[in-house]
Structures are given as C-alpha cells and as structure tokens.
Length: 143
Image: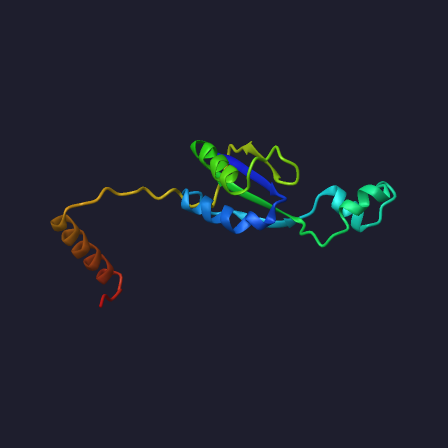
C-alpha cells in the first residue's frame, strides 16, 4: 500500500478530481487546506520576498489543497491518469505536486469491495430469500 499525496494548486479542479478518483474506485481521501511557503511569506510581508515576487501573490488566489489517500499499489497508475486528465500535466507551473510514500502498516481502512459476477434470475431470488431470512434473524424488516 501507498500513501498518495497530492498538493493541488489548481483548486478549481478539486471537485472533478475527487469525482474521478471515486469513479476509479479510489475511495476515501482527506482534503486539507494548505498554503505554500512563498504564499505564506507573501502574506506575512516577509523581507525575504522582493516586491516583484510579492506582487505575483497579491491577488485573491486560493491557497492550495493537500489531498491524502491510502491506495493499493496497483491503483497508482490509475490515480495518476485521473490526476492528469482532470488537473493536467503536473510538470506545468501552478498545477500541483504528487508523490507517494510506501506504507508497511495500515489499520482502520475499509477493504476493497469485490465486484460480484452477475447471477441468473433463479440465483438472485435464492440470494434475496437468504438475505431476507438473515435480516429477519437480525430483526430487520423488508417492505
């Protein structure tokens, strides 16, 4: 497993990015409001930034968003494609930075749900009956 980290400067793409990741089966991410060092120094009127550089950050620009998600090793290529298709080429300025960190332990993460093959009509009825029977034992009602 990996911890995927995406520092997204192009925040107008956030909604499409999250929808794309979800549609690709990458569920569960934490979105953290964040700010880069240059932006923070600019807001602090730091003497480290020249006035010409400071003017680049003087607009009402959004800060960035940091998206973190625990993904399976085999989901990385898919995640990269989703990022590229929604955010664009990360090698372009003011787009974002993406990296992963290998994880050797994760607890509390939901397991991937297996996609079950389609069953015949008879099998579906038998499974439905089993589910209702099992639910009845648990005190659940069906309408």
